[in-house]
Figure 1 (cartoon, rainbow, N blue to C red):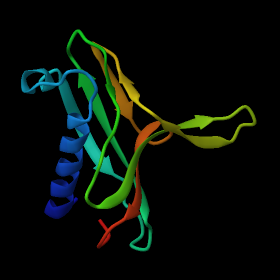
Figure 2: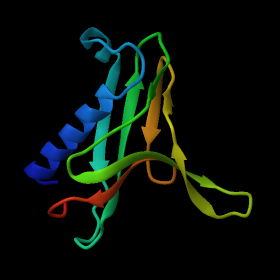
Figure 3: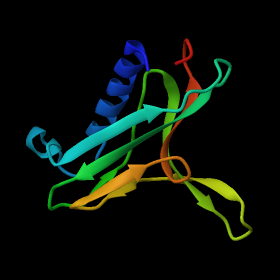
Figure 4: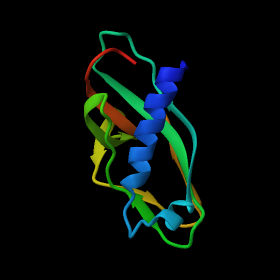
Length: 124
């Protein structure tokens, strides 16, 4: 991952942490830690990608990720890949992603993820 991609990813993650629900004051952000963030590399013609990471909630209060944004994509949505009753994997749009107190929530391929839609500008 090059320096420009890391900067854009850091900006995206900062936006993510600011969007976590609850009365988030600066001192409470310390209860949330982001680990191993990465964005799926896609061909330059692709207008979509997905972001993954782990979020530790070391606090005593349940939180929820309710939104994310990026200046590199028109829309950023929270999704979950889920197998349907007929055995087909489907992406489900989430209004929020629970971050239970004292637990780690993983956003990983085949599960929760950040969907990056309608790229603006140059490819990542």
